[in-house]
Length: 229
Ligand code: ADP
Ligand code: MG
Image (tube, rainbow, N blue to C red; front, side):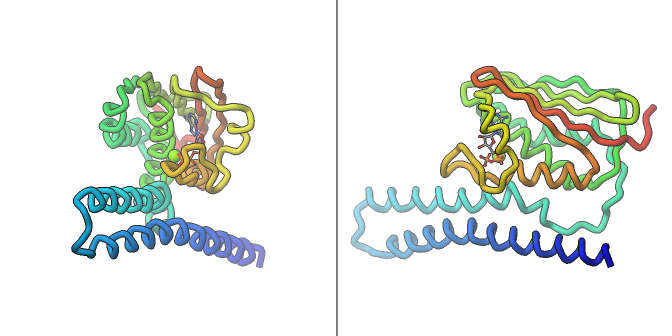
């Protein structure tokens, strides 16, 4: 009975989130489609055409960002109890984020525990850390350093992600993970950290952060390990 209630609640939460996400995707798509219609006018000047095309591109990018921040997480997966090799997972994730880091002149430094396994889904784990690392890189538009490390302490695996970026105020730090909370204007979705929090919870982990304006931000993650050598 209790189990069913929890399921119903979860379903409701997913439905509400789905509605909110659809809205976030539909808006930019509607705008893009409107400008495509305008572009069908043969009498437009070259300059107007260029202007409209760049709006279409920006709106499509905006829809894509929502999908990127959220969708892997929403996708149902059949394997829920994989044994994740944290070190190789993190290496994969860094490969994905590296081009973005290069673009921002961000140097990635790592220090990983020799080996360590946690229980979870690779896809969710990756979505979680891609969102965190993306934020870190975005917090350093003029370059900086991104330190990613993992270590064992007793039965836990700790992952630390530290950036030398813009940092956050106490208020920003408190609001982290709130759906649609973003300081990036039209360049942000405010979904990334919400997804991170849900995934960490699903992996039986905990997350906390320290931040100082103008100095940088450090995220700590703790997950129960299933074995260590
Ligand atoms: P988005 O990245 O789309 O803005 P997120 O949910 O990923 O949304 O992040 C929410 C907000 O948290 C960001 O807009 C930013 O203000 C803040 N934030 C998250 N990570 C960092 C970080 N590493 N450094 C500074 N601010 C951060
Ligand atoms: Mg983000």
